Image 1 (cartoon, rainbow, N blue to C red):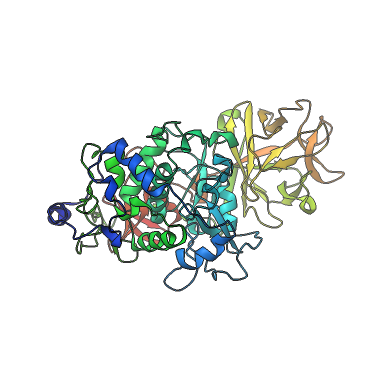
Image 2: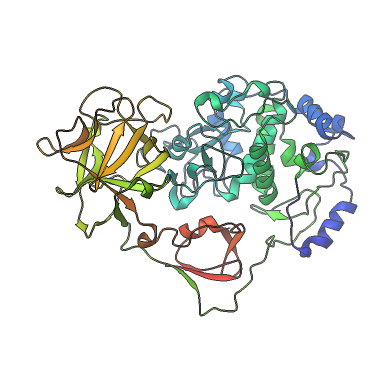
Length: 538
C-alpha cells in the first residue's frame, strides 16, 4: 500500500524522525514490547499477539465504570465518537437510557459488532473496541460494517456519521461511515482486534448477520482487501492523537494490555504495508510516516514538535468573482419532489413519495405506532410537483429506493424500517431487518400510475382507501397511487454531482480543512475552496 503523500514542508521533520533514536520505548512502555524486537511482517504480528493477547477484561457492566477514565473529554463529559452534538455526564441519568433521538442517552458500542464473534469472551467486554456512543446513532449503525457511503439511509446530526450503500472501491452492501475525525481511531481498533485475537478471528463472520463479509478467514490478513485498504488509508489520513494515547493508557490500567498501533503510529505498515521487510525496533522505533500533530495536542512519539499543517494546502482560485454556487432549498427544511411515470426514472438510493394525487395525500406516519398500515399526510401538488418537509409528525415519509428492478426495497429512513407485506391482507407492514421476508417489491407504471407490488403476494399492490383513509395493499378495488421523486437540483441537494477525481479536501476560505468533497453539501453556509475552485454554500 502506498504511503500517504504529505507536503514537502514535512521533509526536514521526517528526516529528523528517521535519524533520532528514542531514549526508551514510547509512552513509558519500557520492555513491554521487547520480545517483538527485530521481527517483521507476519512474525511481528504473531509476537504482538502473544504480548497483548492475554486480556484481563472487566465485566460488561464494569465498562460503565471504565468509561469514567477511558473516555472522558477535557471538559469532563463523555467522549462520543459517533456524535458531535452530545454532552453526556459520565455515569449520569443518560447512561443506558432509552432513546428516541440523538442525544437522549449513551450506551456501549461494539465497534466490531458482537454478533460477528457470536458474543464470545473476552471480546464481548474488551474496552479497546467497546466504546461509549450515542444510543440512537449506535442503533442506526446496527451491525453494518464500516465503510464509505453517501448517507442516503441515515445521517446523524451535522452529517457526522452516515449510513448507506458502500462506495469504497471493491466494497459492497450497506455500511456505516464514522466521521473523518475518528476514522483513524477505529482503524487502529480494528488492527488491535486483528492482532489481540489472532487465534480466534479466522472464525468471525460479518455476513452471518446478513451484511457484507469483511473477514477473509486468514490469520495474518483477517480483513478482505477492500476493507484492509480502507483501514490503512483511514489510519494514514487520521494519525494518532493525544486522545488515543490517553485512552490507550487508561484501558491498559483496566485490562492490563495495550494497543501497539497507538503506541507505535504507523506500525500497521510494518505488518501489512510497505515496511513488511523492515525490522521492528521496540526502543528505537522509526515511524514509516512523517511526524504530525493531531487531535488535542497529540504528536507522534519521539517526533519533536512537528508543524500543525495540512497534508495538501488549498489553492485560492484566480476567479473569485465566478464562484460555483450550491443553491439553497425552497425554504428551510423543505424538499421538492417531481412526478415520475416510467421505471427508467427509478434510481436506487434516491428518495420518493408514494402519493394519492386526487386526495393530495402522501404515505406518512404509522397509524398509532402500529406497523400494520400507514396513514396519509396532506401535501400540495402543483404542476406535478410537491414541495414539503418530510419525516416528521403529520409529514410524508421520504422512502429510499434500494435493491434492483423486480426486487426493490422501500426503506423508511425516519424510523429505520423496510416496508413489507408478510400476509395476504389489506395492510402495509414494516421490519427493521433488510433480509426479512416480504421486503421485496416490483414497481411498474401505467397511465401515470405506479403499481407497487409485494413479492410474496403479487395479486396485491399499494393503493389508497378513501372510505377508511389509509394506504395499504389491496387486490385492485381502491384508488391507484403515483410516485414522486426527489428533485436534487430543485431541492439544492448535490446540485453539483460528485464525479471521478473528486477526491481531496475542502477548505474554508481561511485555509482550514473542513472535510472532503462529499461533506461539502452538509457544511454550514459559507465560502469554501476545493481543487482551486471557490464554492458558496447558501
